[in-house]
Length: 211
Image 1 (cartoon, helix red, strand yellow):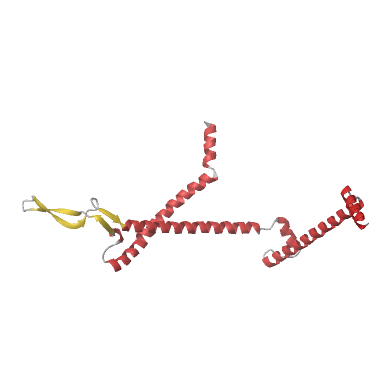
Image 2 (spheres, one colour):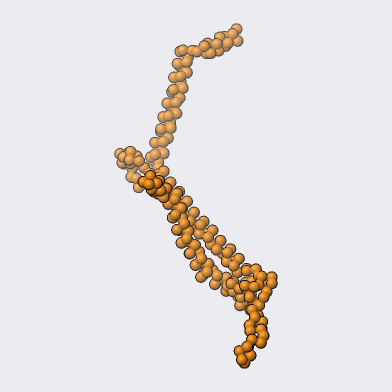
């Protein structure tokens, strides 16, 4: 049992599980925000625009009927008995077949809003990561701070710091190149002083060609 709870604790404290839980909670909160923005801000504006072009017909009543059935209203006599029905002219949506353009447009609006929110979130996260990476790469070590202080360079002077380390790198590269050239020259001299069998054969071949 102790082992079971230990494994369970290890599972729920994993980074990806915690991140997933946080993502679900944040996603639920953003869903409420998106729905509020859609229902209370954008829909009234869209309804107002539609009414300008299509008359008194809000987004929630944008239907194309394929088979329309109207609601019937009972006609009563003086005794309260039903003597017939009359067509009210109001569509019976429960028994009609229709295309609900309003719900379709609402789904498109919600999709665009959710995509926009996710884009903004991802862009913000990527920006924070890039800034953190740049800050980490540009962070000075303890030895570098001491070195700057010894040379009288203030860390707040970014240009002077960059110039100092650029010059230091240039000198280090030149020293490395000079050291490599010296090593190559020494290797050449050592080979001339102690020629290999291949070197001797090459010298003999050169002499034969001369003769």
